[in-house]
Length: 264
Length: 211
Image (cartoon, chains in turn orange, red):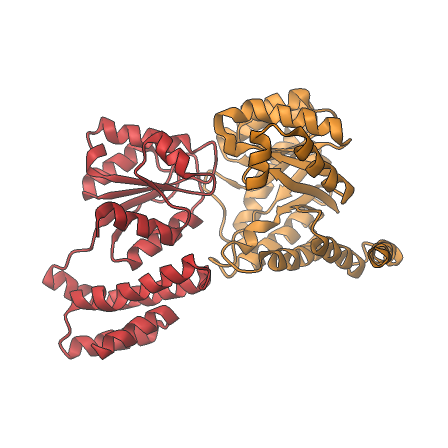
């Protein structure tokens, strides 16, 4: 499972304050905690700073990579901010994100090609987000094929089926699970990623819904997720899911983690 | 009047069939259709909005309450047309250009309908001129703009500029919202109000309109 740590996001009040103060210590500590909890990428999002984003994103990349030896997930809909962040990023980043929306596709594709980064591919286009699994899959397939044709290897593509809240559409969870399963069949070499929190929008005990959905999604082929790796319950859910699905040989990972927890 | 509290309760509980039955019965007994809206349906949705803001009710419950109210309105509609009953206000609503997110915007529309407003929903990816044209065409007192992306937020400012251009700025209150939007941003671009959620948007609108 490829975990993308979601905590460095200025839509969280504490992080906005830390970035405002240019508090490198606090920001790097959050990056380190996520790295220690098993994150493979650290997501970096400072979109709420609007026009300052283009300066702040590369700054964040620089200070975080001085602290942790991990690639980052550069999270911005702004191609200029992405380009500036890629200039200073070391290693292969994960660009978050590209979609089938023509303007976005045209602006982000060159960045993916030139940097050799991986990319999150949102299963949507200028028509919006499809309501059923078939239209979601179609948008994903078209986008995937365009990326492959542009020379982006399958392994560099992380498909995001896009979660809609079950609070407003009761079928949303089922549609996403179905999309995940069909994407996995269509692109077996690629990754499938989700930002989990949308699914629980508007409902109480969101973390419970998020981690329950996560275990279901892993069963259908999800192999990457944007989440809070420092949340012990989501980590345990993931360990349990992997053991139950035979993705953890002899359940060793599960056993080691449970033992470690009991010792602490 | 005792019938009215039963209707209000049925709206809050989201029981569409009961709302329809009670409204039909009240009409047969000679109740005023305008009064049924203002004294039975709207108070129900007001309670729903208040409970939603206090985390006592959640979105799915708000949705079924709104659906119950809608079915009551459907029964009333022919009578309202007949008696020329006017909505409490008109709001033009949409997600700004370049942005395809519709969930928040739909919730806002629903809450305004629940509060007795006529809602003109322009959908998603709506450009500034189209907003201005719709405000003019419908004579709306309110314009609600939604954006979920930081990159599309500037479209809100553009829309305000388009209203000024068209000489409409003083005729309409502009309300903005969406995950990255803040009160400070509303002030910065000269919007009239910001609301953090759909129910608060109605409260804000009433405050602006003095109703």
